[in-house]
Image (cartoon, rainbow, N blue to C red; front, side, top):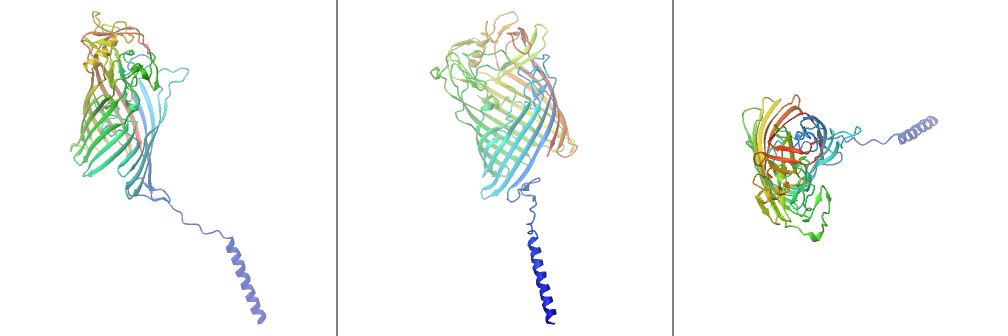
Length: 525
C-alpha cells in the first residue's frame, strides 16, 4: 500500500513537471489585433489611423482629356509659340492630357477646433508642344503640389489650391480655364496665411496674406524695346516681392444659393529704370546698376463679386453671375495660365498677306525717357496702372440625375490710360524692331489717334456631361471667343521676321474668332 502510494505521487509529480516544461515552450498569447476603424465624424471615407485619434481620407481623381484647337484643360491659344494661333503647319489640331490627382485629408479634434491637413499632388503627361526633333519634343511631364495646407482654429497656412480672391464657383459650369471671362482663376495654387471667421447661418469672412508673384504680369518701361506683336516683352522691369497681397473675402452659402465678395491690394514695385527681369533671370542693360534709379511703387488692387442662385427648373439647376474690376492687377480679370503678357492671333485676309489681332497685357506702364506716340509726348514719370474689367453669366440645367448641360457667356476688357497707350504706341514707329503700324495708304499711325492698344474679348460656350455611375463623368465642352484691339480702321501691322513660320509681311489688323473644344473623362474616388 505504501509502495502504491509512492508510485502514484511520483507519477503525479512527473506529470506536473512535464506539463510545466511544455507550457514554457508555448508562445506568449498575442495581443488583440487592432483593426482600422471607420471615422464617422467627417463624412464618408475617413478612417482612424491605428493607434491615434486622427482620421484620414485618401482620395483623388484621374482625368483623361482630348483638346481641339486648345491646350491644357481647354485653354484657348491666344499667344504665339505652338502654331495654333499662327495657323501654321506646326499646330496641333488636338492635344492630349492625362492627369492623376492624389488627395490626403487628415483631421484631429482639439480644444481649439479641428486640426486639419490637406494636400493635393498632381502628376500629368501632355502632348509635347511644337515640332519634334529626333523624336523628342519639349518636356511633357509635370509633377506638382497643387495644395499643401494646415488648418487650425480658423487659421490656414500653406499652398492653397486657389486665392481667397477667386469666387468658389469657377468650375461649376465649365472646364476651360479662360471660359469664366472677366473673373479671376488661380488654378495651381499660391501660398497663403489666412484667418476665417464663421459668423453662423452660412456666413463667413476671411482675411488673407498671399504670395501672388508667380501669377503677376510684367511692368513695362517704355525706354526699353518691345518685342514683336504676339511675343511676350523681352524685358520686364518688375522688382521682387515687397509685401504680400492683402485679400479680404465675405462669403454666404445658404439654401437659396450663395454670394461672394472679395477685394485685394497689391504693390507694383519696379526694379531699376534701365532694365529688369527677363523670365526669372535678372539681366543688366546699358550699364544697369543701383545708381540707375527707379520710379516709386504704386498700389493696385481689385474687387470681385459673384452670385449663385438655385432655381427649381431641373435637378440642381443654378444661375451664376460674376464680375471683376482691377487696377494694376490684370490677372484678377485675365486668366494667366498659359496666356502670358502678349496676345497674337492670325487669320485670313482678302487684301493683305494675312490678318492679325493682338496686344500686350501689362500690370503697369511707365517710361524713364521721353516718348511720343498716339499724338502725345510723354516725359519720364510715374507708373500708369492698367485697368481691367469684365464679367460672365451662366446657367446649368440638370435634365435628370445623370445628364447636365450648361451655357455661359461673358466679356473682358483691357483699358490703358492715354499716357500708357502713348508709351506703347511709340514703339511702333518707322524703323522699330517691334514692327510698324500704318493705315491702308501707308501713313504711319504710331503717332496718331489711330493707335490704341485697348483690348476686348467676348465669348460664349456650352458644356454637357453624363454621369452613368457615381463619381464618373464623361462630357464635352465647346467655346468661342472674339478678339478685338482698338486701333483705327484699315490699320496694317508690318511685321519683322518672326519665328513660327510667319514671314516679314503686312498684316491687316482685324478681329479674330477662336473656336475650341474638349472631350473629358473623369473618375473620382
